[in-house]
Image (cartoon, rainbow, N blue to C red; front, top):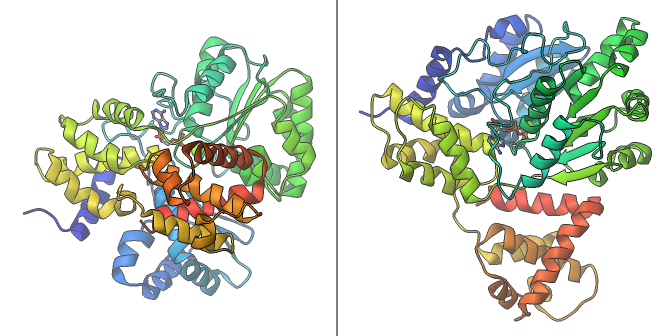
Length: 480
Ligand code: ADP
Ligand code: MG
């Protein structure tokens, strides 16, 4: 008998435990002894299924002043919880920690493949990448497997990969700073850490520092609290290669940005290498001062796109090599067809299939994959999105009507809305350019091409357009 989804969740948890990864002693991280009451309130506020599936896996990751930190097992999980259950979690936080309490949630690093040794996977390499302030509660981690050798190169990330390699080989050269941006789960952290690992091999005398922006912020706050700002400054200013991950996290944090600005200038002027990652291009970071935004753009800015199907398959093949049993090609193809825009989820899907088969002593086949993934990645089916829905959503976002989108008028903002709808059709359907043209009052395919190109270019410079398009993409994908 195959386990039901609920049983499967339990099995999945025991597997995590068997594999030793990374939920070492929840209680050790517990912000206060209020964690258990908090869980109980939360649990009683939702259905058992919601609790089991989404909320039971949130873990405390400390408390800083009024802020409660919770972590989710994956980026996907985090997004879901933020979307659907944020209010109820905040209510429980207030009920237990007081009305002033604030909530911050982020995702835990993806677990390594079960066959690796869980104890070492997030440890720093001995003597490798230098970590300022080892005693911080959430130190940035270097994952030894985030190397260039393990990074599959395809059209979607070729440029970012080449720039990252060039930097590891010749830090402080022509690409300074390097700014890499991409949506979650597309390899930013992997690439930054690959630079750190490779640079350390090539230049052992250099002081290489990889750090999450969150860690930078914590370190700064810690410096102020302990009145050790001189130490903080000296530490950062001795770095030769500074890799700062997820700089969107710095947005709106004025005091920290001031310090960051000076750190940037000192390092840059001394010819040190700077590398940043973000979920948006520099222009999209609205709550940063111009002087910082423009500095991000002084060197090379590059993005990583969602991988094409060949790259997804290549990544799955690489991962499947570690699986306890052979994974049939058809299963890899099945996963590659379904999980399209997040490599972390792609890897997660494969892990779940192989883990499930191992736990239930079955041979992996398509039936098993379909069973397991139907529950766990329902939002990533490739069910095509009807163009009518794209038009309706875009019309509503641009305050116009479908008839106008199809019609001849070129007034703004209607014309821009039409170009956005063309872009979305290209991103979310398999329609050819002429087919897309036919949806918009039989426009020529070159018009469609031009429209798509315009939107792509504007998204690099126009933050409000960028936000609108991203929101539309996300909503349409989620309602698929
Ligand atoms: P991000 O920082 O952009 O959210 P990560 O760097 O954490 O994404 O990548 C998510 C997962 O996908 C990691 O396990 C990483 O190793 C894997 N990954 C991302 N890009 C690639 C790639 N090109 N080849 C192999 N694995 C990749
Ligand atoms: Mg990351």
